[in-house]
Length: 251
Length: 239
Image (cartoon, rainbow over all chains, first blue to last red; front, top):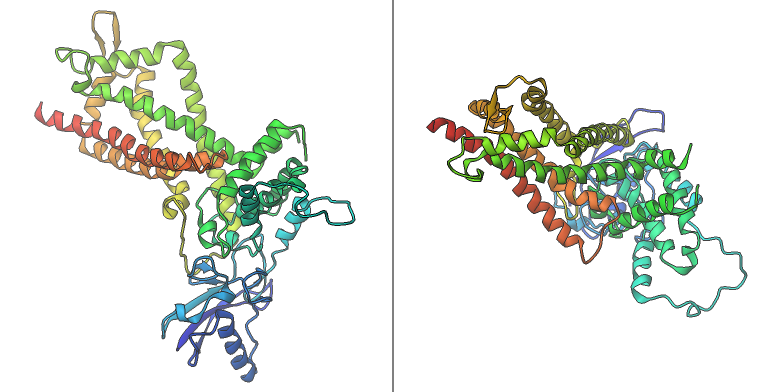
């Protein structure tokens, strides 16, 4: 396959970036999108040029690092797919593909396609955990959890924290991420205890990080590689209102 | 900062205010449409009545009955809150994207129209401009008394029907009105169901019904509004 790439190149956070065009003549359709970038980078290194910086780790769709916006879509055109799991067979021979980094004020660019997503870490530090001060793990069946609840919590827990929701949202809102993390913990008995405090703390941190406000565009769900539903956002909304207005908890 | 202030200035609190004021305005539109229908001869109490009698009596009641007056002040306030808050959110959301946007835009959505959902700020601004024109044309003239009086046997009352009929003799105003109703329809297409989602009311059993009612509402109500001046214009051609 012949592929023309227009890739955003930016030396560092302070520099001004620009698009560079590269042509790759020998791309195998079974390659993943990242493997195509590996080929590009090898060519660039051979030509003594700076390779394109992009994040990647597991390459099996669970680490949430391979973030790029491909032709205007975070993680590319396939639904429920991370960039590393996106294959070149979904493109046509001769295609021009525009690759940009995630764009959000709260995700500053570090280099080329790599952005700093530590805002997400700070939201997790604010409330995305349970305070369990015990030794041994209890038997899995000691606490009965209805199947529907376990499934709802699990589908929220599938969030890999990649930030595609922020990148896709016209408002750069982090609501899908925050709501998934809250829905994962708040529904289970171990997490329920701290739910009231958790939702207030996480929303407070989310706002402090400068993410936009959710206006229910639902682009987040459409682009989420784990297909997390905006049902979680509604859940966070009502849990937040009931915590702020209906409980004594103040964060 | 008290918990109330913190709530109302949080991103979720601001959206909460948007959804509640929005739902109030949605209810108001139904009442307003019911009143406007009295402009048409088909909705007169008696076909033999003078044209606009039902409408003028209704307008007189709405502007003089104290509880309605109180609600009307609430309405002005809610329109302003919804507009100002909307602009603040729009501004903040644009800033959150950062200084450089995407070179290629490709917006997908689930169960709503992405373009409408992302364009609520623009749609709302057009609606606001329309409301200002609308208030100037009718509300202000009513308040200032720049209109003739009429009498149906229960004392003189303001003939609002007269200036409405005069205004929609002019096809330009009919077109502006109808076009604004299309914009309101788009705004409601997203806004109706979005208000429920923001309040946290997303439920497997009820959400399909909410989305259906919302889409019906977004078509039927603006269409009802738009038909009135169009019919009045056609009437004026025959007169």
